[in-house]
Length: 327
Length: 244
Ligand SMILES: Nc1ncnc2c1ncn2[C@@H]1O[C@H](COP(=O)(O)OP(=O)(O)OP(=O)(O)O)[C@@H](O)[C@H]1O
Ligand SMILES: [Mg+2]
Image (tube, rainbow over all chains, first blue to last red; front, top):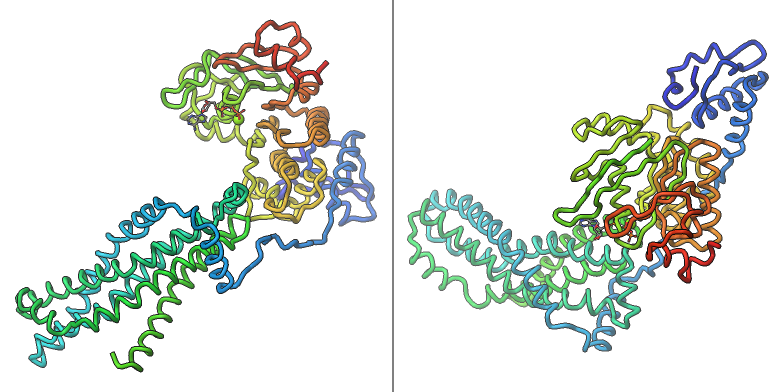
């Protein structure tokens, strides 16, 4: 009989090993660590019985017994060596490093970010904005028809797209797509000690991996918002034509009348704040994730959640401000 | 135990090995030596069947490997314990859980037995800090945990890719003795890739790879008599002098 990982675990009939005064493994041919652990558990259970068997097996079990000691204290070290900074301190550090190392900021990194975060987001932004435009217009069209107020579809879709929905959809998409990407990218560099390597070279990681992203995002978000609002209106125009018989030229003439500078301004003024906020959150959680891969996983999640909720909060704050000053 | 017959291997068009033949016997400790990029890690991948040779045959226990027979290949792999060049520990679980992992995945044994086995294996390699996460360990400690994990299922063969690189000479010596004592007590066959000439004192045989070919296959004591320039500089270079 063998006492190995293949045979123990319910598969051996242990009763034949247990004799009146002994645990008898004389007939065992082969024993491995698992078998030894098994016998040690039996001895623990039948404290009054003595182990008998081949000398080398008994010695082996004795050796395993000695190796079974371990320290039960889970002295949990705090592994997160990076000081956890508050968000405001992080902004301070960015500004400080930015001014100190302004020469290290590479022009190309801006172009790369425009491509990654801006151009890269265009497709999904177009699809979602278009669909939102269609859904909103379609839902309102049915109501408007019953009042005979078809033409007001332009007011409805135009104002909501430029003021609210364009910026919001853009913010949410950037928060999901770009913020998580920044956190993952910087966090992984942290895990692989790339940030340390850059710092040792005398280059600030904040300047190389942080600032260009935040600055770029601040500047391209207004453009993306404008793009999103326009695509959304286009979706609305298509519904207006198919369901409400409003031709395109009439739709866009009316759009020019009802959506004035104020409406576009309200949407656009929020955009840089959204962009800066998303960039800050994404990079912050990247720089201040720990050195373990799962810290990065956790921080990517945090960064998306905090970006999206923050966008909605900022949007609400702007609404209050605009209501107060009356635009 | 393992035999290569006229094995050629490549990554795409880039040829790594040409006409490699050798045999590794049971309970032998065999070192694979060669310069950086000589194809040592690739040889390890071939032994684990992670890579298929371009031509030639690999035998395991005198049976030819059939790369279509996945079940058979897995059965063979289950008998092999590996320490990869870069450890490949799971960072999200503790050291002891890393060692429990293969037992829980591969057998129906209880968590309790898997834990005790992990403790035994970690003690065997002299590692105490069992609750630490791999991220909290030094390079040498990680190697020990990786070795304990490789030993978890009591493998017949242990394959180690540069187990002592990154260790200080004293820890490296300890590690070598550990490998030798594992072989002596459990009869494990050991294949270890190494750059470390000092490790050759525990091995029975050395295979040297150079320029895609196997240029030496024999006892380390015969190395001195070799004329090949690479072998000469390997043993007589600054770093080789410790092996006198
Ligand atoms: N996945 C891969 N794809 C393409 N080429 C590879 C791959 N892995 C290795 N190579 C190439 O194959 C050759 C052998 O690599 P291998 O990793 O086996 O070397 P090594 O002897 O283990 O080196 P080292 O001592 O640096 O670990 C190298 O030239 C390497 O560039
Ligand atoms: Mg290698």
